[in-house]
Length: 125
Image (cartoon, rainbow, N blue to C red; front, top):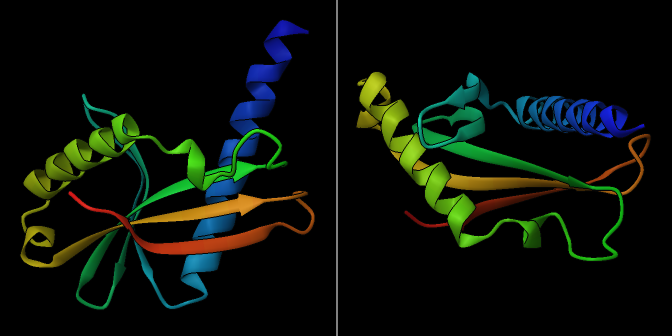
């Protein structure tokens, strides 16, 4: 069914974001925003780790057949995340006083037992 694959993709994306959120929260990070949107794009998770704001892109691949979750993030995607992070910092002046970092949480394998890789400072503004 053509309409079903989009729904499954959406559900997988939400599952991956929730899994990443739980993973980062278990490491004492605080959620500031989820699915923050601007005219430039969306940031999956915005977290705080002590005095650092983390802009987190979450990627899931059930198989690394074509490319890994991390390899699926291209320069255009990075640029959109960076532009969106500027919008977040403009709207949240307190956050703009802190250092910022761009991280990726890459999930792979079956949803029942995913491999989770947290790549800190995955790209630069």
